[in-house]
Image: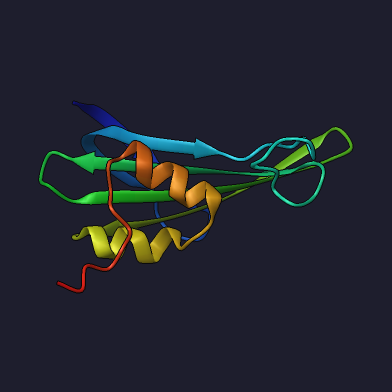
Length: 110
């Protein structure tokens, strides 16, 4: 484990000892299956685990207009896997992140 700082655009950054559990990145290319929807836009999802057993979730929204890039960072500390799933929501990119983290997103009715 190492010391990690997770940026947030609207709030104080999170600093903790932990590790990256999984990440997923959409593509700027409209031919890629995880295309962000607009050329020049993409999204990065990061899921970290802390040494205290919490999760730190981060979404980075990236926009490139001409030669300038703009990043908007959102992050949340979660106590449970259900909170992690709620933060990232659903979709192909979130599913990729959950699969890499070995998180089951179904609701078990039995």
